[in-house]
Amino acid sequence: MALLTALLAFLYHLPHVYKWLLRPYYVASLFMSVAFLAIRKTPGVCDHLSTQREDGNPCDFDWREVEILMFLSAIVMMKNRRAITVEQHVGNIILFSKVANVLLFFRLDIRLGLLYLTLCIVFLMTCKPPLYMGPEYIKYFSDKTIDDELERDGRVTWIVEFFANWSPECQSFASVYADLSLKYNCAGLKFGKVDIGRYGEVSKKYKVSASPLSKQLPSLVIFQGGKEVMRRPQVDKKGRAVSWTFTEENIIREFNLNELYQKSKKPDVHEGISKRFVFLPVN
Image (cartoon, rainbow, N blue to C red; front, side, top):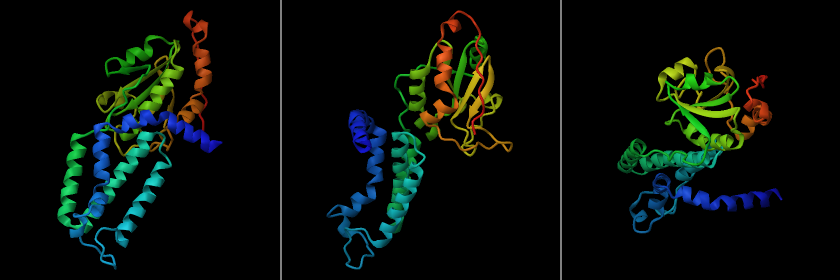
């Protein structure tokens, strides 16, 4: 039954995934990911390639190439264990496929390796993964508006995502956060985002590091009356982020979103009776 459910879910979302994969970024990434495979298997091209196979067949992988591909496949599987969206799964496959291609091309011919590495660098500098453009109930803050919005109405609880557009983790999390805003946004519970890669002063004030090494992106923080009451990931005394997985289930559970939503949409919130919610830290 579980297998049938997964298959039906895949078929239901197939048109969306198909349309998403046809975007130029993913089409180009797909061709770059299979570049070595195409050259090694294309008749008339592979005939001129060197090989270490005992049978001398230049149109099939030798033992070292298979070893490299198996090693990179294992790394992809390990990385995808923590992936929470289709974008992250595909992104990991594309990234490590390109790494494998670099190694394989350099091993085959240093000139091909340099050419492929140059293409990867140009692609990285000129092409960015498409940003989420779907429906959402999210207010975007700037360095001049965030403080006023958070303090405007003490009856409103804000969940704010601190993100950076260059962060792959933030890009993958965008659709999850948008879905949460569609499900839980109400008069007393609102969702916001602020790009700390763009507004450095916000990063300093709210103590969210924009460094790729900090692993604090994205960060979700709950505010009541302009004051922080909870955040994920937590930061230890040394300023390091405690590992935390940004799945929809984790966020709903640790932020008590179901209970918070029920309290926030009650009529007395609209009538002006101030509400306060107590959040207990979850280990």
